[in-house]
Image (cartoon, rainbow, N blue to C red; front, side, top):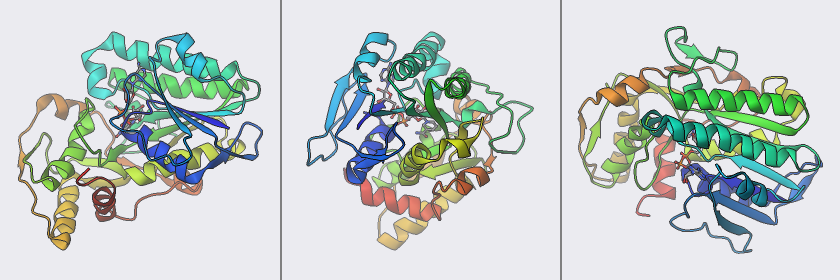
Amino acid sequence: MKVVITGGSGFIGLNLARALIGRGVLTGPSGAEEEIDSIVLFDAVPPPALPPDPDGRVTMVTGDITGREGVAAAIDRDDISVFHLASVVSGGGELDFDLAMAVNLDGARHVFEACRARAGAVRVVFASSIAVFGGAVMPETVGDATKRTPRTTYGVTKAIGELMINDYSRKGFIDGRSARLPTIIVRPGKPNQAASSFASGLFREPLNGEACDLPVDPATFMPVLGHRCCVEGLIALHEADGAALGDDRAVGLPAINRTVADMIAALRRVADAKGIALGPITHRPDPVIEKIVATWPARIDSSRALALGLPLDDSLDRVVEDYIEDFLGE
Ligand SMILES: NC(=O)c1ccc[n+]([C@@H]2O[C@H](COP(=O)([O-])OP(=O)(O)OC[C@H]3O[C@@H](n4cnc5c(N)ncnc54)[C@H](O)[C@@H]3O)[C@@H](O)[C@H]2O)c1
């Protein structure tokens, strides 16, 4: 079978490709486990480097998901699964409303329509976000049954994407699943336009011996998940029995509910244990980031995801150790 990862050059897309290369099989539209013979990274930009791929299964396709034909050309087999990750991210969506609508709504529709055009119900995993929650009506702790009340354009596009996944699945056009992601840490390389980008920077920059400005109050609660569990969660959601998901196919990936201060404490513990000298972290409030982060939920109830078998890191320390093992010095 073929696997298409839109946004495949991004942080999560590349890590997902690595995991799928290692895994080698997925459940195909037939319902049976099939060998993956092709993994296409569909993205507007090429990745810095393709993941190690001894069997030559990975291909990069440079394309824009706002173009319907290009998306349909990539989704060109019936024995296919799609992980739809391409997106304008939160800060970017606040800067450019029209781009967020074009990429996140029109683009998603192109992906879902291309899957619908295939024979059988193609499994589609859509990367949503906890930014579907927000505002005054949002409870302290959100779960899969909490009302979606997004307070950013990005969150609105993700909420609509989740509803499209539900309806395309209800109609039998696709077999869709939405993975509602908390902030995924630790992103290697450069920061991106996500308002949550600082949550990776506060680990990454000090571990590189560089200074880091913290734009939010250290007492801020922020649900996070490590990059390994994120990727394993996306795959587990792909593999989950569609019937077990019921009518609402949006599942919040499990999250660690801790404060920014807890994250810094974990970083210091791991760095001390490994003898790594950290760069300084300075609290410099950024009202724009603070305003966006204040619209996000403080805590996530992960019980449905955990019951479905989706993984959760056992500690923040483990997340830091995984980053050091996978990326430090890259
Ligand atoms: N990383 C997180 O903390 C997090 C949290 C919640 C949700 N998500 C969601 O997970 C998905 C992946 O996130 P990520 O962290 O890997 O983001 P990323 O920015 O690293 O990757 C997104 C990729 O999408 C590509 N892209 C953007 N517009 C495109 C277009 N028009 N056509 C084709 N490709 C396009 C970008 O080039 C980029 O490579 C996104 O949908 C994001 O909204 C991520």
